[in-house]
Image 1 (cartoon, rainbow, N blue to C red):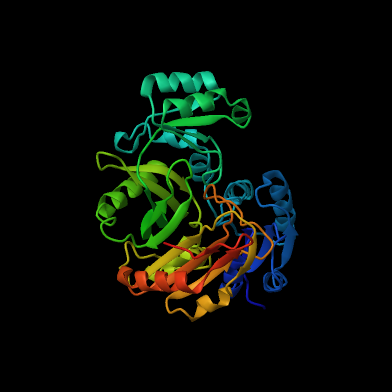
Image 2 (cartoon, rainbow, N blue to C red):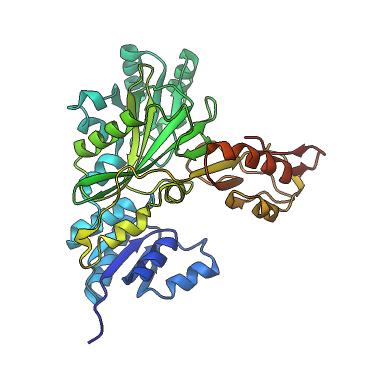
Length: 417
């Protein structure tokens, strides 16, 4: 008899997950948006048992497709490691009795008011907040807490729709912005200042949490919340609060009852030195943070979770706080928004020792896309793998020397970090 292969449903907009699952010995069915898939990506899908092309966040359609797949060959698990498929994967797992993310974890992390409610009984994790469906509710929250404060969608991706209101004038502008309120409801929260946001990447198996790695991201100045640089692990002195950050995130995961899956949790340090949970999602970190963690600690987050779903995977473990043996970095290219005449050949960057990979979409005749938050693409990202933080500075200087953009007005831009 042929060897039984466990049937796994992957919900994704990326071929990397089914590729890993196939290599591990799963029979894979795939649901996702393949619009931007390359020829190599489609070769991966050709090895899947079935492929259903639709956005992974269309939960009702995904569930209907999953039921058909399950009838043809019973599924054993449903997974998604990206922002837009986690809710659908949890609904499918719950409805069909499969292994996967719990509905509770997904609901609490996806809907920010539920998360704040769940933390109300944990004073060390609590933050002043209120649901604000309209301008009047925001005015009431301001009357109690003043500015600065943050307003964000109850359900949203990345930093889309997030507003920092640091002054009375910014508050008034938001109160009077009728178009803004059409996209609600929103959450108002106490503002945690600072230009560094930490992200903690965790692996949870059998209810036990392991921290795979921590990054520090440098934020642009108000009002743009985009991250300009990420480092795994945080460079000194930003590594000082790591023990308290570790403790806070583990307490948070216990408080929400998370029992299986990855989490990407964002933390800032309050003025009194207390780590504060800003957001958490049961997925990998964006901008390839999960790859930087793997380079720095050796922990393969996705592979670990998939191996736990194999027969005998109940013995799968993941190291907690593994030592950092290298430094991973991600640098953002944010050129001026002017029409491009020509650029240096990006392939020259591959000759720079320490440059691991890059994605650059700065082309002649086009104006680079604006970077206004952390949800979408960027004109350019460069990933580094280095022995330590000290090795980063000469690499950054060499990148700045090697890569340039000339605009139609004659200006030449070199990136600075």
